[in-house]
Amino acid sequence: QDQLTESGGGSVQTGGSLRLSCVASRYASGLGCMGWYRQPPGKDTEAVAVTVPATGSTYYARFVKGRFSITRDDAVNTMFLQMNALKPEDTAMYYCTARPPDLCNANNWRVPDYGFWGQGTQVIVSS
Image 1 (cartoon, rainbow, N blue to C red):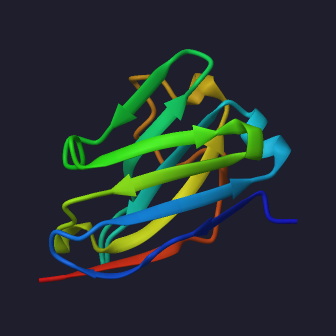
Image 2: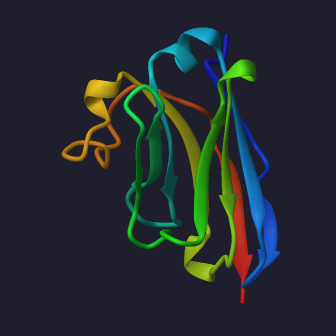
């Protein structure tokens, strides 16, 4: 059984928008911290944004601040990533993740090595 399932990726032109969705199992959603990571072609995985509703904490990577917004609807165990003003450098495979909140603080949220991961959804931004 998949714990996390992403959708919403696609191909857009520079300046366009996409909304990614992640449906989580009840167990994964209950871990407390959910977030998005991405792996650009030929590069390492990097953190995009995470959210911990129980603590009110939300972290964004500097390169997406002001353009991306992470939200959750816990009533349906779904997380979203609204991506606006997309740039070619946003091209990547985007992954939904879930982990306990102690692995999602200001010191470690960028570390991609923890928790459950989905299969990913591809985002391609053309110039």
